[in-house]
Amino acid sequence: MSIIQDKANRLDSVPAAFYDSLSKFEPSLLAFISNQLSKLELKNGRLKPTASNLKIINSIMTKIRSFMRSERYTDIVKDYGSEFDEQAKLTEKLFEEEIGEFKSNAASKGAFELSKSQALLLLIGDSLNKPLFSKIESLLVNSVSQNALDSDLLDSMSLLIVGDDSRLGTLSNYTSTTNNIRDTFSTSDREITQQSADSQGIVWYMYAGGTIRDTRDFCQARDGKYFHKNEVKLWVTGRQRGAGNPSPSTKWQGQIPSTTSSNIFTVCGGYNCNHSLMPVSIFSVPKSVINRNIKNGNYKPTTSEIEQLGLAA
Image: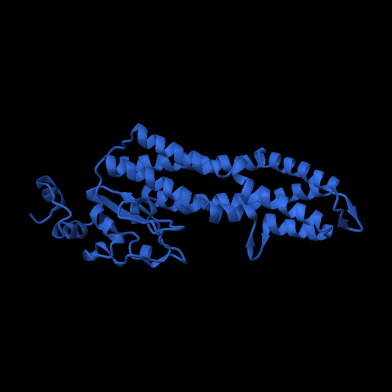
């Protein structure tokens, strides 16, 4: 497998592995919570609406927060964090293979570390207050206040934590919608790639990522094809420049509304996009694409390039 394909495939496989680990963790979280619920006081199978039970809820919430800081969960987050570093190594290899060297500076390294730390911070500690802890506490308090059946609380807690055939568990939902792990990982990878490409004056790209069942038309039209940087910038203008803009449109399915000719390199097709613009050497670009960009004024080859690539003078 080429480095380009490996790097592109991981935009899908890394988040998928995280979601898989999370779905396997959720039943453990439910089992822990269910065990804690046995401490609540009951009468005739119903939760007693007492101050004592509300106090027990406070104790239960403290223990749940502690459980979410245990290795059982933090190891999942750490493993996800390590994938950022692995992706960065692939980026270096890509540049070394295609361009001959990889260049980075303090700013790009700092941006990468910041992106990584922000992604991980959204998965731990107080960041889980709203998506997880507050929902659990609200369910517990309401169940006690309403003198609910113990069995109903257990069923509701199961639906909340692990979900069912039509609903994701709370953590899975949080990391796939509100805090979209797939987009976070992809955007971070594209940002460091583009920063390095800009610093080295790269102008040729391959749109890579492969196609899946629900690949959007925008990506389908570009997958596996090569483009000049100026052609990519036109993708959000709706202007046609030969084959450089396969489906000219100012808007497409799944597009992030704030997409511009500048950030298209980091957002690509938009939400949940598993494609990426991979910087490549001119020697990897098909001659037809080079000639297309000579004709449309995007590229003026040097004398040596004309000779080495067999281009028309």
